[in-house]
Length: 85
Image 1 (cartoon, helix red, strand yellow):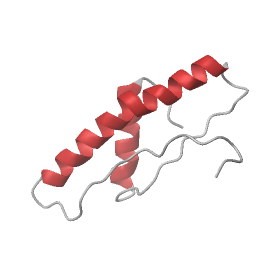
Image 2 (tube, helix red, strand yellow; image 1 turned 135 degrees about the vertical axis):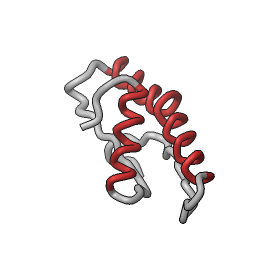
Image 3 (cartoon, helix red, strand yellow; image 1 turned 120 degrees about the vertical axis):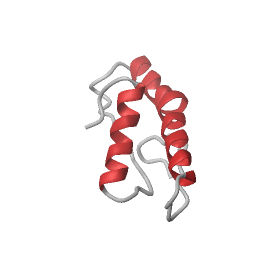
Image 4 (cartoon, rainbow, N blue to C red; image 1 turned 90 degrees about the horizontal axis):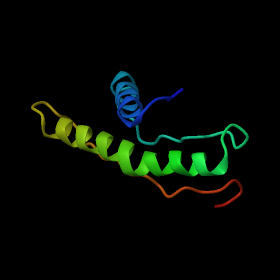
């Protein structure tokens, strides 16, 4: 479960990335009944504007470190609604 401010969520994602030896994709799922729509949209916005840049910066720094074996790539797919392809 990833709960916290942007820095905390980014740190948790980076920890899971390290423990599992790298991630190729992360899917965030939020229960629609748990938050009012404006708060859910704000959470999605923060994932893209605050969390993703922190993760990307850290992974790029790791990619430049001595002994890095594979390039660190990170991107965010645009949000999709249930049933959308």
